[in-house]
Length: 204
Image 1 (cartoon, helix red, strand yellow):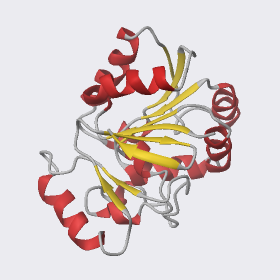
Image 2 (spheres, one colour):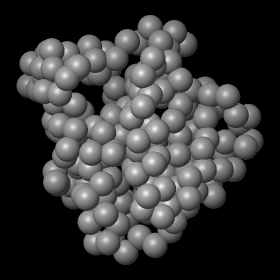
Image 3 (spheres, one colour):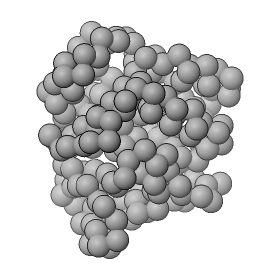
Image 4 (cartoon, helix red, strand yellow):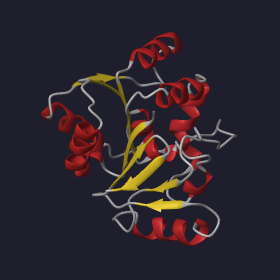
């Protein structure tokens, strides 16, 4: 059964995360953190804040960059992961690097089989059927080799993070205006989270 925690800004949703852990009796303490989406970003302080929040809660962090680690190591670490955490950053670059190593089927298998998954911003968006809707907030130019915008297809909604939050106020509103009639957009600000358990989801 899927156990998924999605946010715009993980460090801003720690209380919801603790409730998520307690309600689902998740006892694992080792988190495989994938900060790859931040590789092409100028500012990545939110990644450090998210990692520190987990450490403060007693979790052990294993860091994995799918872009720069070899494929065999990446596959092995994901296979062994007790909890998965994919951070924010550029969604298109993240998906490009995941597809470069053919990791989508493995991630889908892990998530569908019940491995707890934390997705922050880009890490939440990639669960949708497609990430094309995020091209207003993120630049596809960071992923010149990505020709197919198909995501993992884990969720039947499209997470819209940072809803009316600086510095995304204009681009997130433009994204909403352009796509909300065509897609099942689910907007969340930096202090809300989406919890998916099995086939059900709710915003907290």
